Image (cartoon, rainbow, N blue to C red; front, side, top):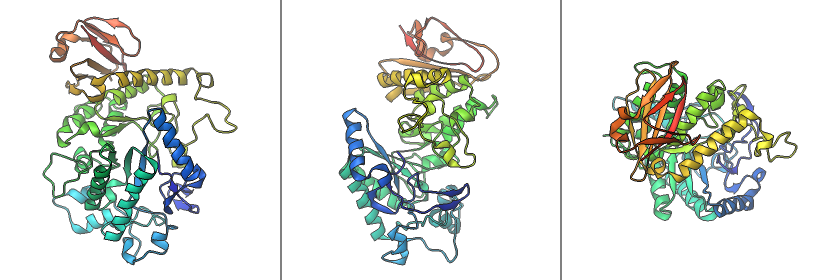
Amino acid sequence: MTPVLENDMPLQSEQAGMMAGYHGYWFTNHYAIDKRLGGENAYKKLIDAAHAKGIKIIQDAVYNHVGNEHWMYKDAPAKDWINQWPAYTNTNHRDEAIFDLMGNAADKKVMLDGWFVPHLPDINQRNPFVANFLVQHALWTVEEFGIDGWRVDTYKYCDEQFMNNVNSALEKDFPTISIFGEAVANTVAGSAYFTKNNMQTTFKHNAPGTTDFPLSYAMMDAINKPFGWTEGVNKLYMTLSQDLLYQAPEKNCIFLDNHDMERFVSMIGSDMNKYKMGMNLLFTLRGIPQLYYGTELWMKNFKDPNDGMVRLDFPGGFPNDEKDKRMASGRDQTENTAFNYVKTLANFRKSNTALQTGKMMQWLPNDGLYVYFRYDQGSTVMILMNTSNKTKSVSLANYGERTNGFKGFKDVVTGVLGVNKIDLAPMESRVVLLTK
């Protein structure tokens, strides 16, 4: 969920025009749940109801900034509660400035202490009183409402030692809590830097996982771009091959779209073959799949004229909705095809330990054909993608390192059985369970 704290802010001017804090990222009171969402009692009821159904709630945390109507800015106990500049200074958004061994202090300071926009004061977590306030609030929130995890917004813009401290405090009091940071990194090395990693760096982060933007970009390249030495599906292969930089890449959150991106269906030109390919990747690659609401039933849009266009209400469950797309009867044929495909894949993943916690092995892409496996002692799942414009015939024997001992396969989505050979039409992808 995006944040639920009070955002009692007037309309503000942003790049896309005049906007309100409907999304929840402009805090004005840390200890109040936004009344537009029903306040504290509604939030508790939501979490209790989710837990009763076996559903866990991950909440967005924002340590980096507050709205300029927050007392922390308007009536701060001391000036250094907020990062101050002689004149307004925007962050440069370049995560490289933080870990670059050849970098300079000025660029790093602008990255960490620069403001997002003029109406979002940048919090100084190096101030021990500020840090203590934020840590206490995080602990109180988990205790008070019973949330199960944190997605930490704007992770890379926060003081590094503070982030380690708050993560450690949460894990000490709540050992089963999940934490992953939103670090919009340009490279795999940059993404890994903000997690537990295997690199020699000047600072070591302790976040278990991250929102895997490099992998998200690579998945889109595999689906949308033609095969090349470093392009198309080779970009996906190359990105995954750099998992050696992470200590636990399986704890990364993987995604095709989110509330800050164009919707997946629009990015693929409303192509059903590409849609199925994307869903196959999302539910079978290593990592924790994040499905943005509505993508499962073909919601689409670009950020035109603003981000609000990719954050429209879910069509169903609200007063005066013309259609209720929670139900099959409210969806058209294409929407039902998309929904049923996701439903089948997601339910298979729920019951298959190889996809949940198994190992992964991939083969070099060949003329647009990409094959990888997820496997454990209980099962072996084979995923095939033909990103070329030619039909491909795939023999199981060519992947003997993983297929030896198996006599055939079962298509996870259609249930069709086969032996020895799998034929893939252009831009077709399959997920099959190997059988003995």
